Amino acid sequence: QVQFVASGGGVVQPGGSLRLSCAASGNSFRIYAMGWYRQAPGKQRELVAAITNRFTTNYDDSVKGRFTISRDNVKNTVYLQMSSLKPEDTAVYYCNLDHRTTTVSGWGQGTQVTVSS
Image (cartoon, rainbow, N blue to C red; front, side):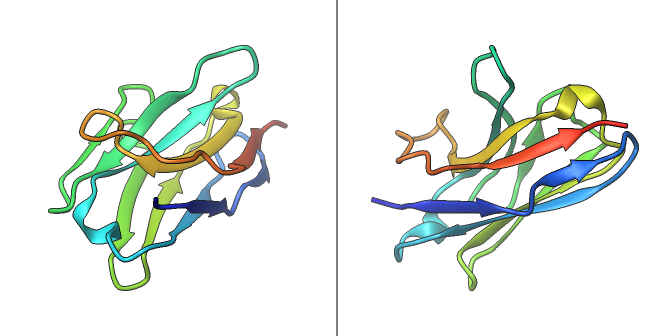
């Protein structure tokens, strides 16, 4: 089973930027479509960005044009570059397999992103 460790979160002012990283264990990383998810307090976890094993990307409308997902199959790492952050982006961010294409693995602890002035 693939495991994930997300990092890079923090506190940032509205309009600011952050880059999240997620390191994956295992030898099969490159074959999977990956996703970044987030869960805000009192809300369900949602998929906000995904990247296929062929590097095709797609985004939820709420982050389109502001977030960029990428992956490095040599480093077994997926990234989320977040720009023009808004208070509503505040959440715990997780990476995992894209649930639309395969069964997700364990969630890990995620990384907190707080957008506040």
